[in-house]
Image (cartoon, rainbow, N blue to C red; front, top):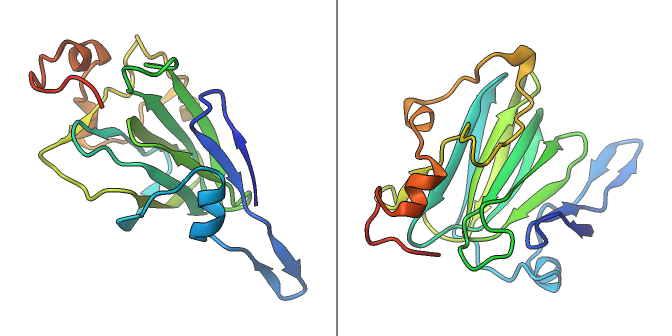
Length: 190
């Protein structure tokens, strides 16, 4: 497999080696040894999958304690995947990165612990699969507001229409609220 660090260098775009012939194609979606060689030396706790319709936006989710690293890929369709650096000591703190992932490209993105994560479905629908490094703790989960002007995420909204979202995601916290500690007085950093 090949990989490239993105503009936030800890976030990696992973390009698996695809073997194709007249029958179709084959590729490894994960092998611990190869991922450890590029610095992804984590034990993955579980695999998750979502099916989302066109125009759905999920996120931006993060955990204030026991943050999750995520290895994300698309089995069907296409998404615009976003990660926001919430690691206070990071030189890229409060910056975001977005990449298109699709079943056709077969690329993956590695998002280390300490990031908020979300995606927007740009195709007719999408099946997104992701491995996580820690279990989900609903009591620690928070949602960063997808449209926070401080972040300025350039979501590729179709025809400028508002995305389809859960009520929880619509009412996410602003970055200023997260940083001020108003939402979680005991939370200070990842």
